[in-house]
Amino acid sequence: MRLVLRSDVKGLGKRGDIVDVADGHARNRLIPGGEAILATPKIEQQAKAMRRSRDLRDARDREGAEAVARKLVPLVIRIPARAGMEGRLFGSVTTQDVVEAVRQQAGIELDRRRLTVDEAIRTLGLHEVGARLHADVEFRITLEVVPAG
Image (tube, rainbow, N blue to C red; front, top):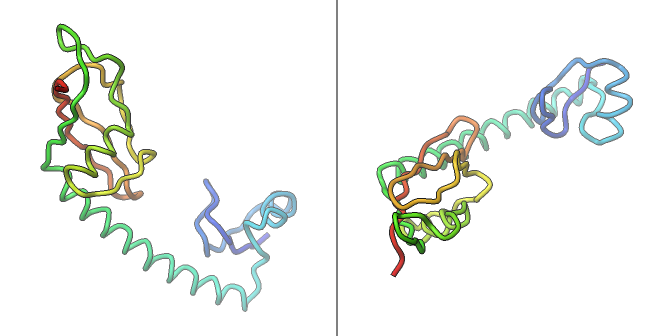
């Protein structure tokens, strides 16, 4: 069955895409869930307009993410944390701590869900955190965890 997607569907396509799917999948999940509508010639024209606006928005979002990446990559974000002997932290540095430090030191608002910590940060020193602000823009933020006080 030929459908036009009304929202992004993982593994199938993005909003405005015209897709061919099994009849059962269309009748049981996509159409009742409001994720797709039957593709008629008139609706296909509307889908083209949706794709154009999506592409423009996507390009604008990518440019913004690249600007943030250009600003953050050369910086070393300092995060003060309470530590004991031998540089071990009492607890760990969380993504929320990273977001706060970036906001204070670089003036950039990040969403903590866009950050990935490969391994819990529990020691003083230099660490890296991954950031994915757009599907095409991934970069690493360098952190320096320093003793508080």
